[in-house]
Image 1 (tube, one colour):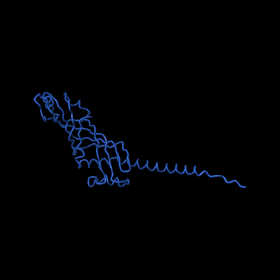
Image 2: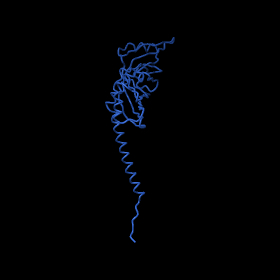
Image 3: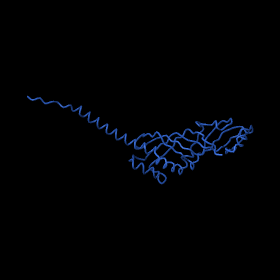
Image 4: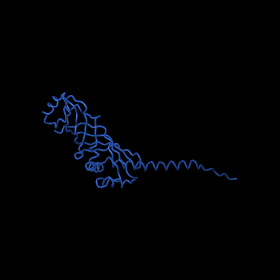
Length: 207
């Protein structure tokens, strides 16, 4: 009687699945790497910058009363600092980093950009008069109470930062993603963009 060796079909199946999984993982990695390079690159930043200048409500609705950095540069005692009404027309130096794929249709990344904004705070009238003499400051009183406390408005430059969320209506190929983002100003029906801005840094006075 001749001996017929047994074949380990389970092992073969496992090896086949392992190779298949490696191929799928490599394809996903290369796809994600391609998306990452595109979204943190110059082209997308330029398309997004143009879009944010057109869709002013995305920028102008940003309001901060906490996490405002570099308030020491105000130069007087104050309280209740708030940063309001960022100027959509002067958004500049936009940067995207740390891109992350949430799903086939949703992505998020870190974003930062510079623009003008209105800084408001409360100080005493004497401090306001002191600041008003500074030619580098653009400052005015919004209101004042009987005790001499003033709500002051001042135009400043600020760097805003936190995250941007991108949600496509449906799964898109890489080429479609490039086409959709390139034409955002003309048609944004396939992509929803939201900003989650929770911090800013005062960078200069717009005197």
